[in-house]
Length: 236
Image (cartoon, rainbow, N blue to C red):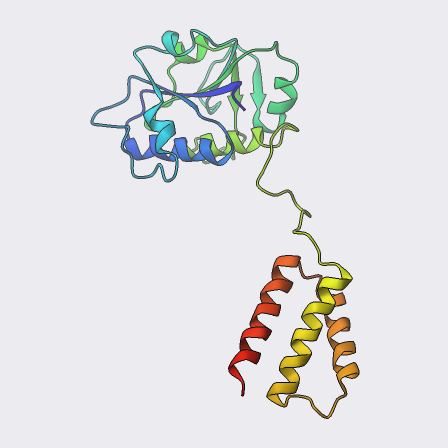
């Protein structure tokens, strides 16, 4: 999802920056821009597990103007409490609906620092406001949590490709592959003197019934077959 970038304005804690980078990596975003980060070194945050490349390639910007220079549409993420806003407000559940209506080009999600959030000037610099609905008692959200919620919402777009979608399983074994395992298991039963009061045909029927109910994948069935063969090898 290269059309999106995350902009962090004056973040204070390097580990929050790292956690934001990790949230981006989880959901396929990589364009991170950091405006006037609070020292010390922020590119080495230990919280950026598995996404050090995002931190290393993050753009360090002196101003928000610089961070948004190549952006076509920007959303300032903020709580609504004590804010007198003039821009259109997009709530997070309607984010993708709003993005579908925007002009083509790069979109920036702008987040403020952990202590004060975005300034009124920062918010006015953006095109619209993004709000994550919360209860009035606790209106603000931790910086990294706000980023991961936004990235997750973006992952609900049709063009997002997860590692595995719900209901997507490994390949299922064919009847012939099942029979190979059944023969290996039956040989183990015979060598271990297990259930020899059953005929070979009866044991195989029981195994077929068990396999039909379990819905094992090819990989799982292959694992069981190798296990049966190894045990059979160790028996006299």
